Image 1 (cartoon, helix red, strand yellow):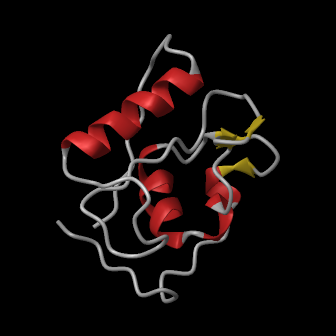
Image 2 (image 1 turned 135 degrees about the horizontal axis):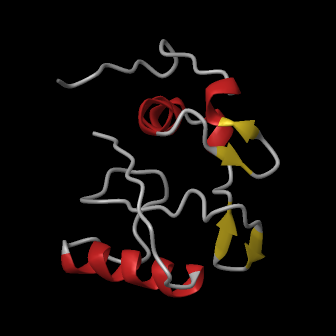
Length: 106
C-alpha cells in the first residue's frame, strides 16, 4: 500500500529524514534490508518546499519521483498544483495507471 502526506514543518530536512528513519526502526524496519524488496514500512522525503538537496544520504526531490506511478497518483490527488523543483507541477507529470498496476483502495 502506498500513500503520501503533506505537512508543514520548521524541522530542517536532514533532521526530518532522521525522524522518518527512526519511525521506520520503531515500526520494525531493519536498516540495511533488501533494496526495493518488501519491508514493513518505507517513509521517504519526496519534496521539501522549493529546495533541491544533493547530499550523500538525502536527495530532494526524491530521485525517480517522476517515474513512480505509485507515488505520483496519490500525490496528484492531494497536491496537484505542487511544484517539484526541476520537474514542474505534479499535475503535469505523466502517470501510467497500468504500469505497474495501480488500484485505489477506498
